[in-house]
Each structure stands twice: as structure tokens, then as C-alpha cells.
Image 1 (cartoon, rainbow over the protein chains, first blue to last red):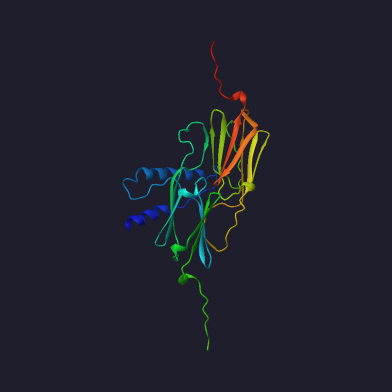
Image 2: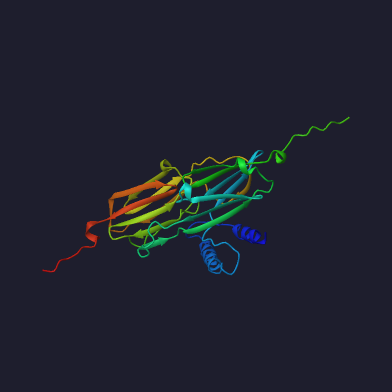
Length: 159
Length: 116
């Protein structure tokens, strides 16, 4: 169980993208280096290796959670989706189109390699009713809430 | 492809790109997740390749729990330099990646010279 906890703690690292040449790009580079460092030392820890983390949006409605994850460049079959307790995990790998072509790069901003990200759905959900759709590089998930966690209207009678 | 000087616009999304030069062509790949093919405007004007567009994805209602993705307009431009044939530009959109292939001008392509 501790393994899972550590795994999730690592996966919940927030992703920030503020554009290519913004003041934040240095921070993003630092994050990439940190991730590489963790990857190199992953043999000594239980942390999973990952190279980048996709950006996501999560919204909650009365009936469901809607999770959208940006994974451009991946094919539908290359995305792995799994559910443990209250966590939805998305895993995959973005491969280089041509690996040998290392020279000739004028700009190299895109992230390659494996990613791994978990989202906690606090109120719980029905794992058998998750709907997944992949469209233009975005994974859209609809995660229906359990009946008992849906908001209910309770009528209060005053005598 | 000289320097690939890019102009930055603060209000718009700046898509992440890779620019790779091969012997015959220069390939630009841009990450545009959630952008449809007809939401992209690609043009070459006076040696500047411009990529402009808008993400028209419908956003579901509800309370926001996590908001990391960027929405709205995106812009990026590239200075092509003299070695690029601006009349032969090919663009393809696949799984949220726009791949632009620019052919080099005949004059700058590598040539083998036979010694007599």
C-alpha cells in the first residue's frame, strides 16, 4: 500500500505550461531535469519513471466528473487507463517519430517518453460506467458519480 | 531556416514545437490538442510562416476542480530564411499534432559533385 501512496504522490505533481519563452520556461526546464533525475534514481525508490505530465481539466457536475487530458501525438491504443480505489490513472508513452535524427534540431520543445498521472475523484465513482473518448489529441473521460453521492433534494417539513 | 526567430504574443497560447532540419526539408511539428483542422490558419507572407487559430472545443459546465489546459487563441510564427521554397509547403493534422513540411530550395540542397 505504501508503494501505491508514493506512486500517487509522484503522479500528482502539477504541470505548468505558460508558453515557450515565458519567464516560466526556466522552471519548466528545471522540472524536466528533476523528472530525469528521479527517473535515473528510480531503481533506488519505488517511484514510477515518467518524463512528462500531460495538462488536464477536471470539472464536477451533479451527476459526473469530466476529465480532459491533453495527450497530442498519441494513438488511442497507446493510452492506458486504470482505476484503483478513488483514483483514475492515465499512462502512456510518446515515442519519437525518428529516433536516430538527433542532429538538425532548431527547436526542441515537445516532451517525449513516458507519462503517468493519477487523479483523485474525492466523492467516489462507478468504475464500470466510465466513458472514454479520444478526439484530436485529447482524452475525454466522463466519470459518473455513485448514486449515493449524487446531491439529493431533501424536503424539510416544518410543523 | 535562419535562426527560427519566433514572435511571441502574450495573450495567445504558444504551442510547443519541434523544428527539425533534414537534407531536403525542414519539418515543424506543433502540439495543438483539441484543435480541429478547420480551426487552423497557416500562411506564408514575406518569408514568415504564421500559424494562427482558435481552440473551439466545447467546455462542459460544472464546477472547476483542475484547470491546467489552455483554451482560446493560439499564435506562432517562424522566419523561414532564404533556403526554403515557400511555394511547396505541406501540412497534415493527426491526433492533435500539426506537421508542416517545408521543402528546401534547389540551390541549398546538398549536391554530390563528381570529379572527372
